View: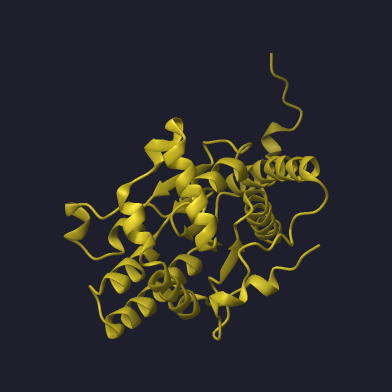
Length: 268
């Protein structure tokens, strides 16, 4: 089985070290891979039930990536068997006027996971050290301050019972072109396309540099980053599911002990 160590971001991380077309976590043929994703989805549901039963800790899954990298698809497949009562998804769009009137972490803190819950962030607080950097809205000094603030914010979450899993879904520019073109050419998918996607695409290299800097600065012991090769959608789903399942298994949940008052009780 492939190791996650290669994909964990370190202080000397270079995004070019990870091949977006890598399929190390795919084993067997397509049918076997689909069966594996489904089996892991079932186990993730069981593990989420234990997380809820324990009722003390929380899990936060952060999904970042360029347009078309598959954040929605990851959520759809990885949590295909998980009860919606135990998983809450928050999608981070451009800040509203209400959000811009406050600090950039305000809207994030409002949707952190509750005890016993898995929260999934489709984009996240990292938008505020990506877009502003590329657009030149903040300078290097401010970006550095924000990296430190984000590390402190995540440390606060970890120290109050949240386990954080951060995944950067990594695709290459050619793969993005094909996916954008497919959206344009397929009437049923055109709603996913925005002309703004093409404008952002012209800044591909700048975004790659911004990701590289942000990931290296905010991959910590308490909240490390993993780069997920995502040109292959099945590989992306398998790798994220395995990483999340490994994380949940390591939490070793302790469900409440049996209630002595219920011993021998008969429901009539």
